Image 1 (cartoon, rainbow, N blue to C red):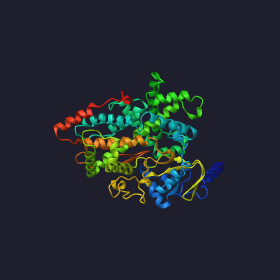
Image 2: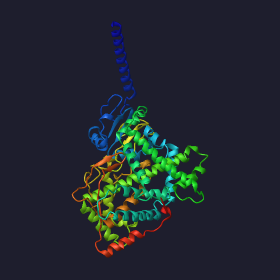
Image 3: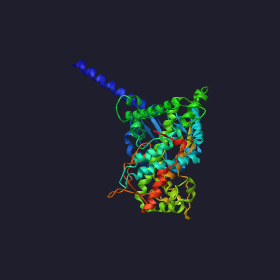
Image 4: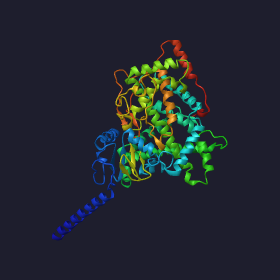
Amino acid sequence: MLLYSFLLTDLQILLLFFTIFLLISEQLKNRKPKNFPPGPTCYPFLGNILSLDGAQLHLQLTKMSKTYGDIFSLRLGGIHCVVVNSYTMVKEALIDQADTFSGRSSNAIFKHINKFQGISFNNGYNWKQQRRFTLSTLRNLGVGKNILESSIKEEFNFLCQAIRNTDGESFDAYHLISNAVSNIICSLVFGRRFEYTDKKFLNMILLLSRALRLEGSIWAQVYNSFPNFMNLIPGPHKEMISCFKQLCNFLTDEIKAHHADWDPSSPRDFIDCYLTEIEKRTDDPEAGFHEEGLCYTLLDLFAAGTETTATTLLWSFIYMMKFPEIQEKVQAEIDKVIGQSRQPCMADRPNMPYTDAVIHEIQRIANIVPLNIPRFTYNDTTLGGYFIPKGIQIIPNLTSVLFDETQWKSPHSFDPQNFLNSQGEFIKPDAFLPFSAGKRICPGESIARMEVFLFFTSILQVFTLSPPVGTKPSLEFELGITLSPKPFKMTARLRWQSCSQRERVSVRYERGFSLPQISKQS
């Protein structure tokens, strides 16, 4: 018995010394560099993870800047992060020091999603080659040209008919809008569109939305901090990885289908062009042109070309229902500039300052990508007087920019006057950065801007949007990589009352016109 007591005491002392050793090691390992940005007190091993609110992290970080300043630090497990707030500081980081702040974090989540390939989570020479090829190929396929505008107009014909089929009854617009928007990028990369009744494709859109929501959750941060441990236990992080894997399988099938009838001399779409580039770049393996690289580039394009624009349009419906007087002003400008005999076109935009202001205000206040995508520093640098070492993860808080009280007339309310001068002319403040800035600015910005304008104006030209009877529009959100509205329903009623006008609209939107980019049906 006495021997047992001595052994127990020795074991307790050993455990005590081991615990102290771990605490000291953890403290030494995670020491802050001299003149590092301040931040809240960290817990041992976990850092600040337990004190973060994953449901409204963008709001919490913006509020924390009131206490710690526009530049402050967090520790997520063993990962040091610097949160950059306000237009002035974000501009200094992303634009004035674009080279230094253009890296992507090599964290465990990105490794699982795409093995650091593609264009969104890549770095160095590989990233530059992939991005340059992608941008030039999309331009060749019609991005920024009339052919893309025609594709969007054609897709609206399908969308318009689907909305008309609701017969003024309330419906959830998520599937229709997501499918319509996704069909634009699909016409470019796959050479075809997908029917709104295609269950397999609708499932892919749902998987994408779920994956991006989990990727921006606290579970992803915990996984990045403790990947080996998290791989051993179940949880939403496993669901996220599964979603991305299923998306990659879908894209791989598309690549295989293209191989079957691929003609290098006559490329039909992005996949064909990439397959040709693979053959051209066999002597440059570091550029990353191979079928796995193609799959992950497609994943980036599919995600960026679907989720953000669809989410913007969904928010636009909510704000038009919430502010019917603004919806009426937009419709009045549409009637004045465009009328009812033709569809809106991009050439109309300069003549529609109020509508343009409303669209930009929706993008600002909807705050689609509130915390951007994390970056890391390529070199040691200083920002706002603080020392930021090489390899530190940076979180550019775009929420703090889009709601910066020093930059906007009405930062916390929905007000199109934020984008209009005293003469009613459209202006775009420098702090309008929903697509980020610098070398990592969203490569699909031009596509998204065209889609949002054409879909938004075309819908309000034909329909008046309102909430179901007895309900009010809600601004509640769900936070992931994107800030999405919670599921909602709306009604869309034709604006024309006379029979002759309805017949004219029916002919106009059911006739459609064929385009090479979307000629194949799924």
